[in-house]
Image (cartoon, rainbow, N blue to C red):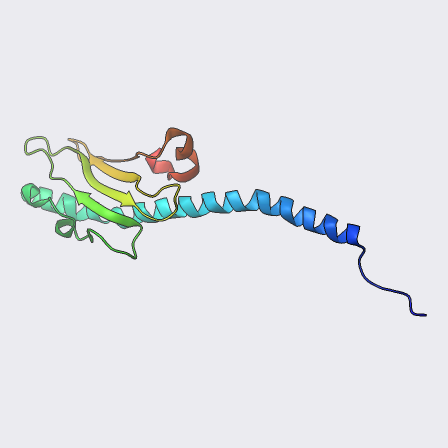
Amino acid sequence: MKKQQGFTLIELMIVIAIIAILAAIALPQYQNYVAKSQVTAGLAELSPGKTQYETLLNEGKGTTLTTADAVGLQATSTTNRCSAITVLAPDATTGAQTNALSCTLAGSPRIVGKKITWARDTNGVWTCSTDIATADKAKFAPATCQ
């Protein structure tokens, strides 16, 4: 008679339990990674508009800064990380605008509908901010938007 080969039921159950534990740890980490990459992609999509914003402002055309097209960005797109991009003209006397460029994020349920905003102060310094919940900022927001 041949000797039987293979795994016992208990050995298979142990392997399945180990795989389940690893999956329980890995999946939430992966979801956080995806959400953070989508926030970073949204910021990267929005950032080129700062250059055109400054150019138009320095040319005295600050009042034309009312659409995404004015700064060379697409207002909406199904392929972008920003479901909507808004642009607000700077203050006529100071040049400041707290919501100069704003991106409404699309993608992961953890960040969908949240906004990333570039603000311009009177000295021309740009500051990034986001309305992602304080508890999630460290997980999802880039270091420049904390």
